[in-house]
Each structure stands twice: as structure tokens, then as C-alpha cells.
Length: 157
Image (cartoon, rainbow, N blue to C red; front, side, top):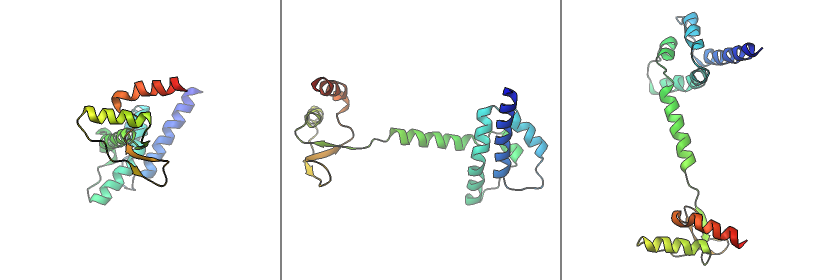
């Protein structure tokens, strides 16, 4: 029963690859199938999922499309997978600024952090949508004080 499920999933990935790749009467589908089914499950997924990106890239850039068998043999999706991984890492590392209100523990922590580094504190601003005067910082507390300040806030409540 388990072999049937794995085989059906692999066949589904292969079918997706066939749908995504442009029609070419010279493709040896027997060779393509043999190459595809010896790939690991992860490689089959990458191959079938990223084929459409490769095809679109070639069309937009005017590059000649590799033969499908050659694309599978050379793991042509690897570059697209690297781009995808970098994009995920960049999205995950982006910080959302936090409005810190003047006179709070967080404000005082940022003030001490910036003074210790010889940086001036930005002048507080008033933004109608926010409550009170303050400034946008990369996090509620500065890196050095974050753990200590969160502990103090938790202890105070």
C-alpha cells in the first residue's frame, strides 16, 4: 500500500513536469521518465516545480531552452532553488519597525544604547495613528537590552 502512495505521488510530480515543459516532438519521454524517477523525492519536487520558472526565464531572456533530459541530468533547477532560498532568508530576516513611545522603558533602553555608541537619539515625533510621541526603531528594545528588558517587563506584570 505504501509503495502505491509513493508511486502515485511521484507520478503526479512527473505529470506536473510534463505539463510545465513546452511541447517538443523531439523529446524522448522514455529517457526523461527514466532520469526523473531515479531522482530523490525532493529532487523530483524541485524539478517539476521549478521547470515553469526555467521555461519562463528562457522566454523572457531570449535564451535557448535546454533539452529536458539534459536539464534533469545537470540539475538545471539548482540555480532557481538557490534564488528561492535566498528570497526566503531575506524575507525572514527583514525587521518590521516598532513605534517606541517616549518615556517608556523601551525608550530609555534605546536612549542608553545609542548614547553608549556615541549616537544621538532621534527627536521624538508625533504620528496621529500612533499613541504618543516616539520614534520608529528596529525592535522594541535594543539588542543588548532586549533580554534584560523583556525580563523586567514580565516581572513587573
